[in-house]
Image (cartoon, rainbow, N blue to C red; front, side, top):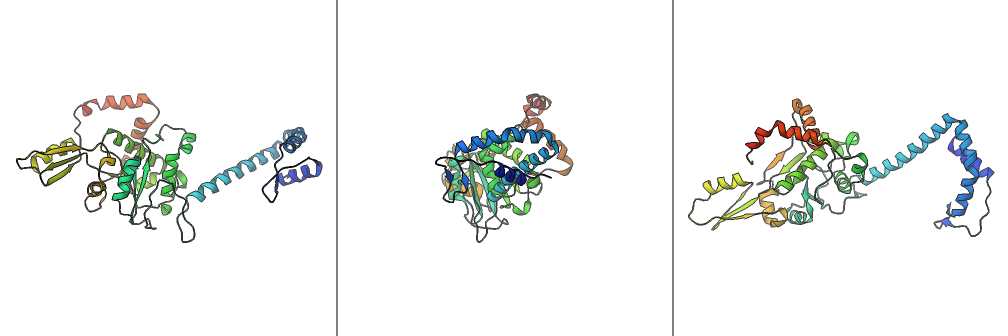
Amino acid sequence: MITTDDIMLTCAAMISVFIREPEFQGQNKGRLMTAEASRLVENTLRDAFDHWLAASPSQALKLLDWSVERAEDRLRRRAEKDVMRKTAVRKLRLPGKLADCSNNSAEGSELFIVEGDSAGGSAKQARNRATQAILPLRGKILNVASATKDKLTANQQLADLVQALGAGTGNKYSHTDLRYDKIIIMTDADVDGAHIASLLITFFWRQMPKLVEEGHLYLAVPPLYRLTQGSKNAYARNDAHREDLMKSFFTGKGKVEVSRFKGLGEMLPAQLKETTMDPSKRTLLKVVVKKDEYDETADSVERLMGNKPEARFAFVQERAAFAANLVDI
């Protein structure tokens, strides 16, 4: 069998090139960088190498497989190097916007995925630095259910998220390498926030299904309103909750002042901590999929988030009566 080493040795024995003022790479001059030399060698070898490839198809395929394998191995080792866990002698290469917690163990650690730098700033001030990490994302992430593999690979926001979690994706997902026990999606309490949360849930469902199955994914429940009457104040999740508080909690005669939060970035760090981040006071919704509803869930995600608009249209038509009687919860 002729190997690539044999080819290189043969080429070295056959070609002798003399170049004026050669240029080399680095101080050790381990590689010739002169463009003229590359052209001379390429022109000399091209025809002979083409004839050898045509005459030895089996060897040519082995050479091609070897080249592809080496390239994939380089990419794999580069990716694995970027997501290694912190150790006493080596630090993890983490996304620049991630404010990590000081706890080196996944147990008890939480990662809050927040919407934008403004909310990220408030969350970083409100967090418990020992156990709570913050990763701000810019706007709406890529919809992985309708994106191509190339777009998914090139998306920096998703790359940062995968890097921060440290567990890999797809078949390479490893629950033992997951850096946080709870992954908490914390977006604004409005339609845009719900859309971003849906995109993130779709990402985890498609790329890290075991993370969802193992019960690591949660949704934060931030307030939409702040109600004040004298020294009394309360927070409401939505319109229905606000009306309920107006009738049951505020019983005095004074006027109830109602302020609406445009986003998490508008909340003071103390308010965000009190309502959404403090484990003793907050409400978290755990994302779960029942085993007997797995196929139905997969079908719904494909219909709603996939690249077929007619499937979404049919989904809406089927549930038009239900949508007419929706109550904001």
